Amino acid sequence: MVKVIGIDPGTNLWGIVGLENSTIIYENAFPTKRVINKPELLIDILDSIEDIDLIVAPSGFGIPLTSITELTHEQIFELTLKRQKSGSELVGLGRVIDLLLKKDYNAYFIPGVKHLPTVPLYRKINKIDMGTADKVCSAALSIFDQSNYYNIDYDKTNFILIELGSGFTAILGIKNGQIVDGIGGSSGGLGFMGGGALDGELAYILKDIKKSTIYQGGITSIVGSSQLSPEEFMLLIEKDDRCKIAFDALIESICKSVLAMTISVNKPKEILLSGRLSQQEEMFGALNKRLSYIAPLRNISGLAGAKYTKEAAQGAALIANGLADGQYKKLIENMKIKDASGSIFDNIYYDLPE
Image (cartoon, rainbow, N blue to C red; front, top):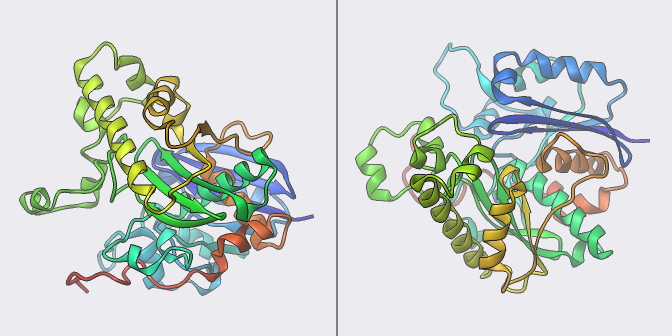
């Protein structure tokens, strides 16, 4: 019996899924602000679950597969990509990692898309965000899902994944059950919060770009309401002109990214959707109308019995099971997660600061 935990540090919600073999034994989701304000909450939950064999820890931008006992300060920076002033207090994901380090958990940090050997080197040039570690988790669940749906082996799955989160939009290309390309939330099209790739001239004009800048420019900025939920937005698209413009911009941005991904996956079996926005009928209908000529569209089903958590948390649990030599071992072996290597700063041909 293999008992594992998968953790997804989402933009608005943190998800935790516990699996014992293929059965969900724990599932919950918490507002991100609650976890950030009280990271001990996560530790209390883990302490309440006995005999955990392995945990996939919240991995941010990702690093090659690394045990928490071997984590370095440089890797913590790569996971968070937040500049830390000397002597300042750890916050956010950094604080959670610090608390996990102080416990005797068998926890691992997993790679992002850029670290995977299944992505050709030439696609990694001048890219950092090709898909964060949670997108790798969503891809793992999607590969599992298509394998079950068509009763085919993992290495026979082929699809384009549209991840429609409450913060960012990401597009991944999967061929033969392996991630071969990715357009990350901060390097691609519009997201619900993030504006995606930033025009170079606009970046020059903005000048003092902060981490918060990455969370601007998307739907909430266009509409002018940072408190707007995806569900509220969908109710307003036929009533409010700005919401309609924002919706049209989002749909076209997604379609352009999917068409770009057909260069890497030219004959997808399906186009799969995941994320909070994908559950909205109007969103699915609009994308189906524009993209069904490429391949059929379908929302992934997720794990049997899952009720509260997003796809990334469920996928993290599958990866944890595979790393613990459970029944999903072949899934993560086919994805070559253990063979990930390098740094998100590799193959960058700009002058980077120290």
